[in-house]
Image: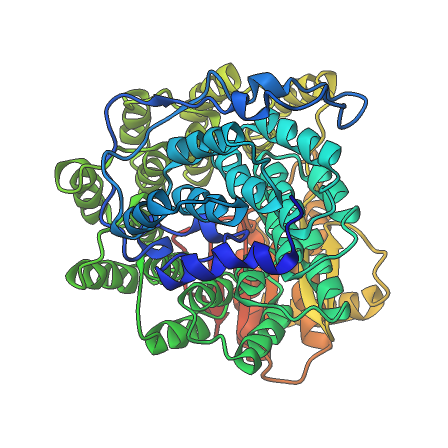
Length: 616
């Protein structure tokens, strides 16, 4: 049966009238209560239901392979997989089902309507069962049918089953369909096969906003933030009007890249497009401005929102936490609860992070314990790591060691690494060695642990131990990730690597640093060379410090902007102790606000002090 483009939209229209929306790349990321506001809380049985849609394809001819390395057995499509099904039907889909059952003649469009309804309600077993029944009624699944069930395999990251459907659509000649293509792009992206997503996208003869959005979202989901931004720009250049999903996808990429200029441009698009009241976009803007260093703008957007959900609350709480506004973050957390929004796992990570960054130990214990006792939430690795970080920052290293050792789950190298970092800050080499052995036992290639231990050995003059560790790294083929910092200027991002002199402005940068250094020393600055990893004299150590990437980026920003302009720098690792002190002096001498985002938090330098209060 030939299905026209208009017919494919008929199920969408019906579903829209009862509260459903057509699935898109970010749809399944939303809380269920926001995806389907008319649905009651869904209760799941203790026993899962077996998925088995293989029989849908019993009538298919012998299948072809998708590619040379993909050999698909359609007949075993999803047998053996299991999901939990709800024990009762939501009122909306129940009404649709009753209408469907009374229909004397059911065509492809009516089957698609009920299948999509079940799939979008999260009732996957029912959706797949109806696909089987559809096949038994001599109706072949079409593009809309398959684009409705593909998200099921995305949800459960079952790429093998998704590939089998991909093989089927190729044989049926509907692989170029924009809806199928979008679903395949999304399915592969959620299975961490972004190259396959790119391949599907490149073969689409017609690309609508949904297909573009799917790949943009896929890049973000897989940490390919630069590609996400690049593709978004291509989308705009292709005269495809960005919709809410596109903005919800690309704004997190700006947040991770700290590209405030692009973020502001996107904000302008949002305002011109009339999407500023969209709760998902507003939440993404709050997150973007927070992570790009402008917490004031983030708070303004949050305060103007008519409705706050758990995502927007968590974004602003974490934003204040990362900027060192611990008390404000806690106040927002408490306000969220008063507003009737139940904190989830991520919200607790945010409030524990806030406590950690300002040393609120007792408050953190209260929140940590309330997770299970009050809210019935299990502690996950992120919560343990936050408490371990809290105790370590507070100097309670042995307590942190015992806490990690007695975790309910097996501690990973990343959890131990939070304590190792604290051992470095508090210069406890003996405990650091014990912690490092724990890390190497579970994560033998943890580069951060090797670097921290090399730093500690160097600062204690233990050059032989450092040499042994470096030899061990070389034998493993490990290389230290270079410290780099970047800054935006004139819509371009300028990067600096420690010790690198290749930037065209390096002569001017050095002139500025030499001049400001004289003033710094007059005001009491003394270089802290304890973290220099080379066994050289003090003069050479100081020269190495002067070439640190964050200092070069700050200098570049100052010499290229008007007096009074705020300088914003991002660094890929923790800011070093000496640069932290030096930038405080520079902020005072130049009368500039300097914001440095490292891999842990934001430092707001102003008039010779830092927002972290030297507690970092």
